[in-house]
Length: 356
Image 1 (spheres, rainbow, N blue to C red):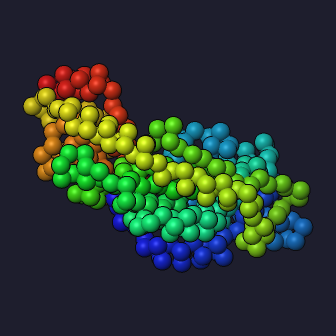
Image 2 (tube, one colour; image 1 turned 90 degrees about the vertical axis):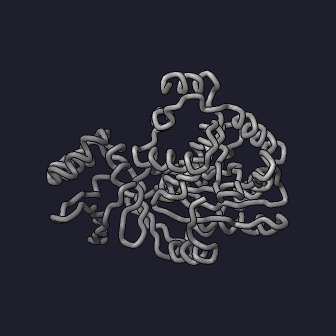
Image 3 (cartoon, rainbow, N blue to C red; image 1 turned 30 degrees about the vertical axis):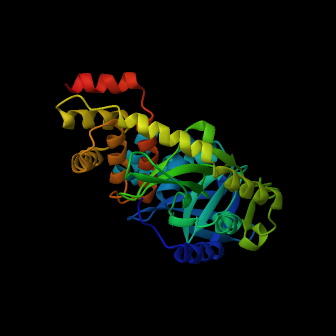
């Protein structure tokens, strides 16, 4: 499992962000994009007060602006890198040609999200405030890793009281992953995870039966331009937070944990039968959207681990997840490890046959 912030560092950063972020609701005809010669920025115009707010634009907001305006991502990126003035002309043209009310979420002077006015917000500080007391009530539970990125907040909790062996000496413990996105990259979710002691790997259980989502509050834009401060958002939906707490409690599920362990034991019996292990890893990596660099890391950890089975391959993926720079991608790879663990035996046999 990739190291992130300490729990104290996460709490400090969430508190800082709570006081530094602002949300704007406004008509797109009151938004313009400019190019400064170095990067793009957007300007929010409060025409009643003759006040302009100039903001940088991060990668998430760029993607969402393009999607909202129906500009294909590849073309958007091409204009952004090769003809930035053409991008500003396109964006400003569509802002005015097809106006709509949008929510612009900002942090530290940067637009970090460009969302529908009906986007339902649930903020990271509120989630942490609701779930951390529940975690502390679970005897011996610990936060193994946590982080907040431009896209999501992650809290990964391990419960050592729910522990077993896949095979003698290979100890795994139950856990949960709590995620939330303030920028429209996914609803608040609580998912089981399995923590492997021998290599500190985390595997996120990603099947639909175990994922539990909750959405936040709605918005009403009764005026053209509105600024929402943290103080305004402090009038929480208490019922929502109670649901979040109930979800965390319900995610500590011994039955589900035992089912995943049985999957691991079954995968341990699915051998790699080809002698061309690099080809096998390359094919499996392509199936699950791995980069060449990630595939190389998986091969390295598979060989080092010496477990040439489906279980060994899944563990090589989750071990490689510790090496990637992005915490978002690392967690995604922990989820991919579970997907590989659950690969159909027909596909597993096909991969072995093709790589033979």
